[in-house]
Image (cartoon, rainbow, N blue to C red; front, side, top):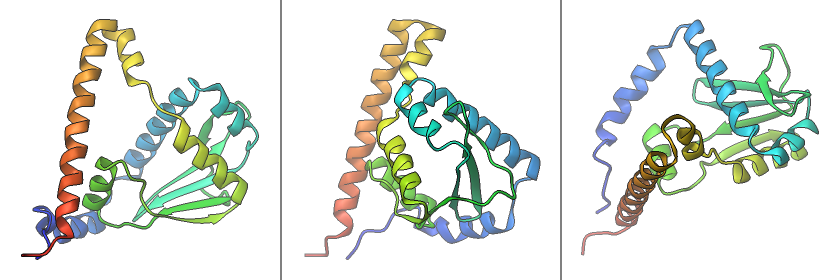
Length: 181
């Protein structure tokens, strides 16, 4: 007998809520602008990432999942900006998995979600390099606010909690394939 997630009961309900309730356009716009600021903050810490984006200046990437979409454009500074709504995407990345719970479980296991890729192959390779190599050093940013020692202690605690969650998610994923004996 396969083991189901205890949250699977809520999935149809959350799907219905997600399909009927849409945030106002101004909320979506603000969230997207804040996301671009965060992405650029992370990119500015990695010169190779900026150099790679500089080579793709003006190119547009559309990332989408369910009803959510984000259209980004590489700038001449090697950073990102929101693309014009009418801009044609050079690359479209669509997350195939529809369930937020399945995406969370995969993320906890350290897996990338399944993605449909349409468009420019070279741009897709650059985006893949960015995803694989650019990491946010949250501990470094936190140390600027609270100091090195507290930031390291908090970072260590978060790493141990994330490791425990990954181990739990991995053990639960291993249980789903087993039958009753």
